[in-house]
Image (tube, rainbow, N blue to C red; front, side, top):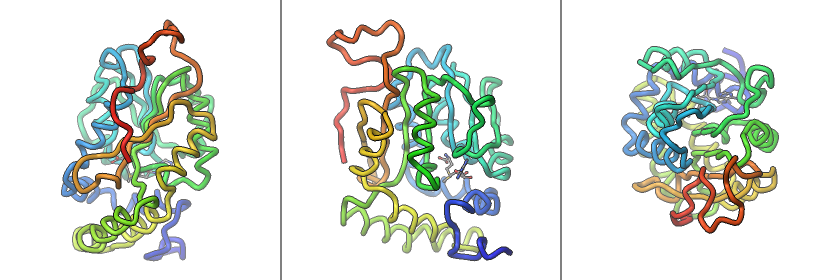
Length: 267
Ligand SMILES: C[S@@+](CC[C@H](N)C(=O)[O-])C[C@H]1O[C@@H](n2cnc3c(N)ncnc32)[C@H](O)[C@@H]1O
């Protein structure tokens, strides 16, 4: 075991290797988290993808075992979906499931996407529980923006508790009361789950992350939270690539397609 793989030493540069180790138990653990799959579906629906995704090209970055891919497929069953992860074992678990021929899984680093292989433009990107694990978030966000068609949405589904003492307290209670002990029992090691706890506490607050998205050039940046214990803990951060999708009148009174702007912005 290298020093980087020792318990408690996981960081953004080693996290995908840790997911390799935990891949086989991942689905059972997230299945025990009430709302996990429904919340991913909610984020995918919030992207406002039109016409069941007919003719759209979508990316699911950090797809893991395919939970977020399934959510994207649910929101846009007619789209072409490319699902990307750096962990070979997480991808192996994903590929064991049944998928339509419109879904493909690719092993790649979401911080270093080959422009030839992944050039785009894409009509939407979902990144669920990924951004927190990246070393250079601004560079990654800039790259994602450049891969999107004008007006196309990025949905970042992520924990963010820094702005609220209550959210931080609930998060720590759930981690130390449930997630970390359950992870230890199910996998024999709690390292990844302690990393999860710590990395969420360290991650941007809602204001900082929405500011970051705006600073790198996303437009109409907004955030909505989830129901359940994850309220004000898990969020959908939405932004659009600059420009309007073809055929949208900038002076029209209704919002452009791509984002549902009718919902409350909740924190
Ligand atoms: C918590 S899992 C989330 C999986 C899936 N999106 C879901 O919602 O269930 C995070 C995933 O991000 C992947 N990941 C972390 N850093 C990555 C990187 N730089 N490039 C690609 N995948 C990465 C990990 O391997 C892991 O599968």
